Amino acid sequence: MKRNVREPFEEVFKIHERQIYYLIRKLNIDDSHQEFYQEGLYAMWEAVQTFQPGKSQLSTHLHNTIRNRLVDLMRIKKRRQRHDSIYCKAEMQKLGSGNHYRDTDIPIQEELAVTIHETDLWEELKPLLTTNQRKWVKYYIFMDMSNREIAEQEHVSIDAVKSWAKMAKQKLKRKGLERDWPEIK
Image (cartoon, rainbow, N blue to C red):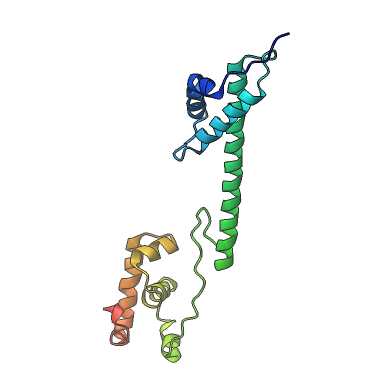
């Protein structure tokens, strides 16, 4: 009658520890927090406990058990990451309208409900300014955005925004608004 003698885990660990590192490298895993190493170590311990000498060699059993456990952990992390991404997008939609520019994740700014105390003046200025010049006034004066931010928002060059600003400033100065809006100077 043969006794089923198991090797102590410490001896197996000393001999096969490099196999954990090998599998982590082979599977291209970034293990900066040693999470995968710990999972591989636990899988090694379980493999030693469940090893049956007549069915396979210990090294093969260790390799398969550790590899499968690492792949499972990768899948779990990927699923969690996907879930977190979906959750974040849903939360961002709650904060904004959910509208964004095509091909980017930049949200579309909603029209501001900026109260202009002199609505008659604004109504008088609207026909004088082009659509782009009105955008510059809205973004630059009321929303305090830089020309670079306006360019990114509108998907145009900074020079285009500067051109809008130059023409809008000239028209607003003709109306004598530089004293009301010092940003125009």
